[in-house]
Image 1 (cartoon, one colour):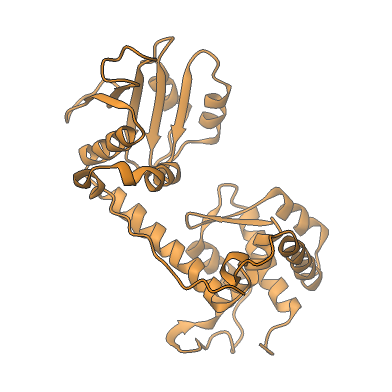
Image 2 (cartoon, rainbow, N blue to C red; image 1 turned 120 degrees about the horizontal axis):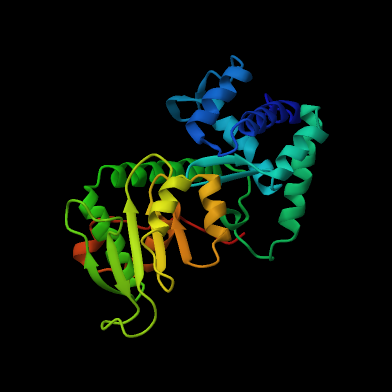
Length: 294
């Protein structure tokens, strides 16, 4: 693509990392691309349509293409539609102020990554920078956005049933699910066996909300846990940094925090054992693509 040079790719990819450097928790891909366009405006060529896709601007595709090398260099992560700069990426910004040198180093590390991969991998497995790699990136983000929207609109009691169904699929016995109304801080009670004779009680709190749970919310949940209980806190909005740190430091109670992404991964792993009537609460369909050997 004659219109693009290492300097231009460096300008775009550096802008991505600079913007994310100001967002410790990361940003959605859409927010990142919008801010990059304000910081590094598209050229007239980039304002044009992406080949074979009328109405789809070239600029956003090119920015995505420019981020592939930084991802493989370990400077940028893309997870569940959220882009986040890594400590290595922050160091790269401080070390390589020239955009061309910045991208050149990212691509060097990208090639080092490729050399360390097993031989015989397909282009898809190698994540070679191609149009299909960019399209796959967008497809993952769109799929994740659909999942988040679906779960955000799921009735609260159905969301409890979803978590309970997941626990059953993981071979736990769900003894009780809180009915609608006040629950005293516990939504699900589970055991390792049907009689509750083996292992500790598992107390689960489920929150389907956008806001993160802070330390105050965590303290309230810990207050219902006995010395031998296991606590599982599921919140679609996630948990604040201090709350996560406190959960990691907990020594007297066993406590697990599960955010939306963690729940999603567990559901993918265990949905095969979820009964059909409950699988419909989060119906996922695998997508297959052609993966020819190199």
